[in-house]
Length: 115
Image 1 (cartoon, rainbow, N blue to C red):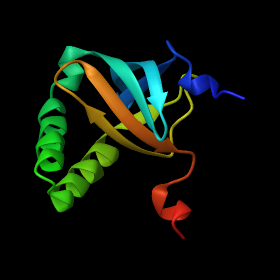
Image 2: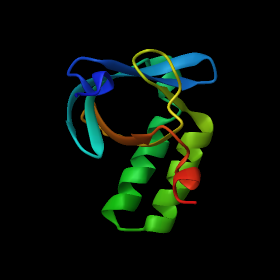
Image 3: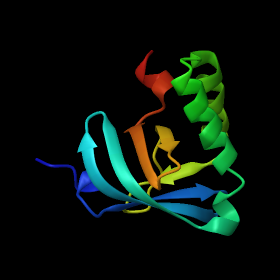
């Protein structure tokens, strides 16, 4: 059975507080990663763009401590919702300069999964 959240064209939403900052339209999945085209809402997403760029630099340089710090900042500032509007408990999101995104997600916080 396929997950409707991963259907091509389904839209996940990224929020800062109660403000939507981006829409992620699913283009495919290569589990555990989901891939999407990103439609940013410029006035609200722009403050986070440098954080996503910093994350990519850290990953490219294999600086996992810095990458983890970026993930923590992203998760503390932003909320990801499923296409039905319910919140995603845990996610690792990359937003790339080319207008695409990739993310992993889980129904429970990663810390709870690892216990």
